[in-house]
Image 1 (spheres, one colour):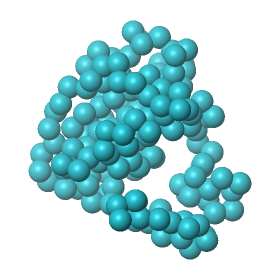
Image 2: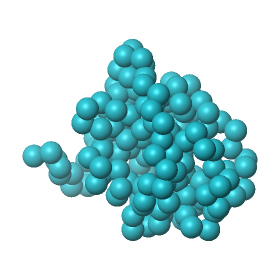
Image 3: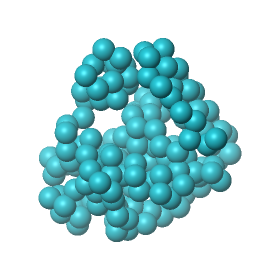
Image 4: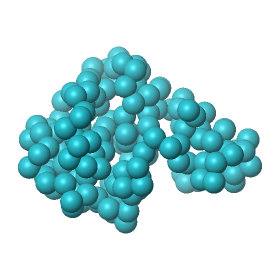
Length: 163
């Protein structure tokens, strides 16, 4: 299923996420943008996994945020340790209805709603090797450019936030 579906009522929603997960994602994205990051949801990684939110900072740092909308969502997920090999910092994000003490202590923790997020625990840094950083950054750039061109071809007006 494509990330952008120009024929959907909202082409930025691809149907894989619950409404609650999308609200958490929105709040997380707002926080990351405040911190200076460019954000890309649902980034496919070289391992075949798909990161819920990837953030690329001006200095090249890469963060991945794994969004968990329920206790069941967290307990069912055994793939999250793989994300460490694709980022400098790994975070979990959830809403106030999911107990914070269920999340791994060796990851950052964000509490979010549809309007914002708070960093309750910073993530430990584990710097990527230069070759891995380049590969993830190129994957991020290509995915962002392809999504942008898809949105433009679908008739959406796209502005350049850097200008």
